[in-house]
Structures are given as structure tokens and as C-alpha cells.
Amino acid sequence: MKLLALRLSALLAILCAAGCGSRPKAALEDFTVPVYRPAYASGFEILGAEGLQSTILRTRTPWQGAEGEGTALCILRNGEETPADFDGEVLRGEAQRIVCMSSTHVALLDAVGAVRRIVGISGVDGVSNPYIAAHRKAIGEVGYEGNIDYERLLSLQPDLVLLFGVQGASSMEPKLRELGIPFVYMGEYLEESPLGKAEWLIAAGELTGCRAEAEKCFDSIPQRYDALRKRVAEAGSKAPKVMINTPYGDSWFMASRGSYVARLIADAGGDYIYRKNTSNRSLPIDLEEAYLLAAEADIWINVGDFATLGEMKARMPRFAAVKSMQHGEVYNCDRRVNAAGGNDYWESGVVHPDLVLRDLTKIFHPELVADDFVYYRRVE
Image (cartoon, one colour):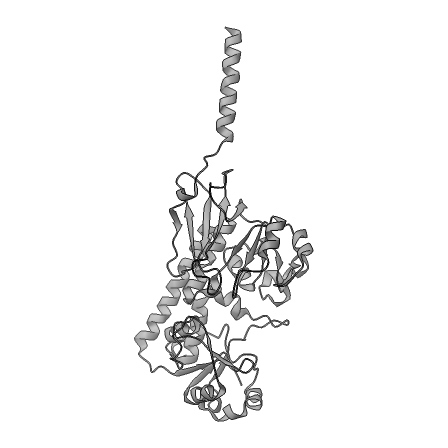
């Protein structure tokens, strides 16, 4: 009897150990449970599987023109295994050490309370984030696309690299795979909806195990944005005609009617002056057409690297007589630029479309906004 009891105890111990050590393994087709469906963003979704804690972050159109070329990152939790047939990137546990290839990634991580997890950045001196600036010596500079310091990057021991693509996949992909470093594309820059850009902070929250905090942070942004948009619409004020940008090389790029900037202008009660572009990207126009548009505009915004009206008039003498220049109605989104030229409008502005909208409303309808500018300033 004693021997039988010992054998039974041993068998139970083995069964218990086997049961405690095993985790259910799912197939890729099991990941159909919507963990998060964006309300405004079109470029990502988060999927889960019944009974599992792991999730898959899918990105649609990870770079411009990449329709149908989505990417996927599986975030494994609770000791679970990679789903069968999954051929994307795999992150084991939430990312604790992150390398950012864009300053907007810094803003997204900061919004969800995970900025301290950043160990490396491309162009770190151009980042405006206060935490990064205060800890500059502890943050690794990894270089730029086409000139990455992989030895430095590897020394940072990152769990994850946040990538972006412009005209195609990042050239970093093959080397990161060789080094065994997981990566994910963050496509917030491709979103045309101001709220859609900001909603990518939910993706940042999923990567870091802070999705609940991210959802709470994001929930208030559309509320503030829509409240101001509604106030502008109800005011019924005349919409000023708005010109944008300045020459870039020999061309003057004008955003499409459905673009991020055009939507912000409309929501702030402005009338974007260029109606020809119905594509999904900015298109160049010649200087003659740009002059005719500028001459008709009441207000001119986003004037590039011009610091003063005098500088604009000196470098573009033909435009000196247009009414926006004559009346001092020229504004630039460079109020928060650091010593290295990093512009916080392109960084934290992505996660604060409500504040960008408030600045533009103050420009177009100053009677509706008493607050000071955050990202914009009058060019004088």
C-alpha cells in the first residue's frame, strides 16, 4: 500500500507539472477576436484569440502605396506559443526596451506613460520631449535610414524597434531579422484624420502593456476636438481663405482636399484654397499658380523655415504684396523648436490634434479662443 501511494503521488506530481507548464497553442485563424477596433484610424487593428492573452497587432498600408502589404506583430504573453502558420514578427512579452526611428514614436510612447522605456532614437538631438532632453546621455543615437549604427543599436539590447516606411519597406528589415530584433511599423503619419493619427497611441499602449491607460488617454481627445469643432460650426462665421506652405526646391507642394492639414483647416472654420488635388498625397504646383493662390488667400499658414515677414519678402519678393503679407496674417507652426531644429508640432502635435485645432481656430476666428498658441505663432 505504501509503495502504491508513493507511485500515485509521483504520477500526480508529473501530471500537475505537465499541466502547469503547458499553455494552449492556437492557430493563426483563431486570432479573430477584436481586441481594439479603431474609431478613426484606418491603419491598424488589434486581434486576440479566445482563452489567450497574446495578441496580434496588424498594420494596414505600413508605407505609402503599400495597399495590400500589411504587416503583423504577435505579442506573446503568459508563456503562450507563437500561433501556427504565423509568419510575422514576434515580441515575447511587452516591450521594455524600445528604439524609435521617428520622433512621433516618442510622443506616442510618452502619451501612454512608457517614454522611460526608450533606449535609442534616430535623431535624438532633434527630439523635443522633456524626458528625452533631460536624459540625453542615457539615450543611444542609432543613426538614420541608410546609415544605421547597428553595433550601437545592438548594444542597447532593444526588445523592439519602431519603424516607418516612406516609399517602401524600411531598409533596416533584413539586418534586424539577422540580429533577431523584432520590429513593427507605426503608420500614424499616413493617417489623414487628425484623430486617426492620435489613435495610434492605442497601438503604442498595446506594445507596452499599457492599452487601458492608452484608451483612457485617447477617449478625451475626440471629446475636446469635437466640442471645439461644433462651437466653430455653430458660430457661423465667414471662413477665411487659407494658403499653405512655401517653395521646396523648385516646387510648391499642396496637400489634397482630404488631407490631414485640409481637414484641420475645415474643422477650424477655414477654407482651404487649393481644390484641384483630389488624390491621397501632396502634389507640386509651379510658382505662378502658387502666386495666384496666395494673392487670393486671406491667411497663410505653415511657411516652412521662414522666421520673419522680412525674410519672406526678401526671398520671395513677388509675394510681398499679397494681402496676407500686407495685413500680417501669416502664421507658422514653429513656436516650439529646439536648438537642433526639432519641431514639436511634428512630434507631440500628432497626439494633440485638439490643441492644433485650437491654434488654428484662434488664427481663423480669434474671438472663439482666448488661450495662447501652443504650436503656432504669428510671423512678424
